[in-house]
Image (cartoon, rainbow, N blue to C red; front, side, top):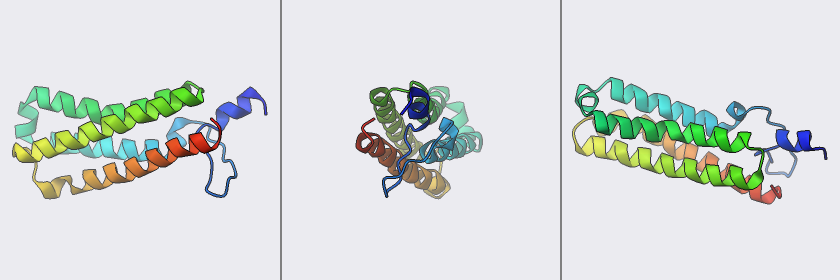
Length: 142
């Protein structure tokens, strides 16, 4: 298999073992879910004046939420299997940080738990997709 073909196959094994070409990181389900999570978090922040008034909190939350997509993209674009797996780990860490900061926001009274349900649901889906993507890299020898 040529090097260009190998690059296109990063993160793309199906359960039955066949390979699916992904040409851009935005095609990865993990990235798509991370993007939806980020957008939801940004909406929560915009909708809460109390959160917006706490600039350090907002910066930490939005940086963590943004890092999930950024790390998936950066790892994918390195075209190196070990690097991709490592950046998926960074992405998972950022996802956990963002979830924790959302929980802090609930405890601080910035958000009510109900308004955060969609973000937590997206975070869970993103976690599962990212872990599966990482596992697919191991099984594909990447």
